[in-house]
Length: 293
Image 1 (cartoon, rainbow, N blue to C red):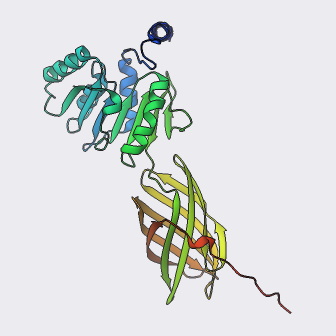
Image 2: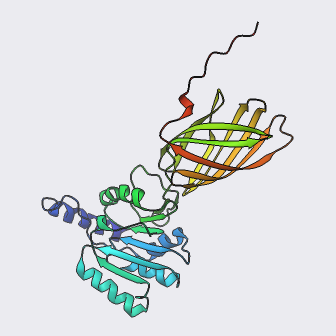
């Protein structure tokens, strides 16, 4: 840690010196090889992965990934052409140049749509500046791994703290908005309207069926996998337990609903297909309920 602290102190001095010329600068400080391997283990590499390193330096993260898994592909970008040339030379020397390549390019110009793993070891403010690009471009389920620094208020999904923090985030699908769907149960068609709010991988919401509304519980979002429970009284069916599980596909969710109407002696499994819309029936007038005489 003394060596790391000394390196980071020197980096701070370098950043302060260069600040007038460039507002944000991430100096080249190679990741310790042990931490590189810990990052990649945390990512749980798969054969079909495309590992992308933003600020790839000498290429060691992508090259190590290629050594750890002989089927995955990867590429990196760096603003230093000399480092890019060195990384490509090392890829050729290792015999992995057919699936690993490095480009002389600004990290903000990288296209992240094909990435399944995104690695970064950049100055913390630089990583925070790249966060919107990752959330906008990367597909849900993409794993993001970093060494030491975080991504601001986006909490990591998993961390390994010893001997030094390495972290993993899973890019969440976008579920915020107005959703509607219908379910068929015991010959009845029931319409639902839900409103979801989201902050990174944390989501919450409310739903309406008929004139009754309720809060969603146990809301879980991991990549494109989405689930929640809803306990609500349905007209003609009584108090019904709902459990929804599905995959988010842009403005659609496709999956399965598990329902158990009172007295909860029977349960039903039906297809669940929800669509996102510009308006919501959740806000429709409810009307007054006449008091019993």
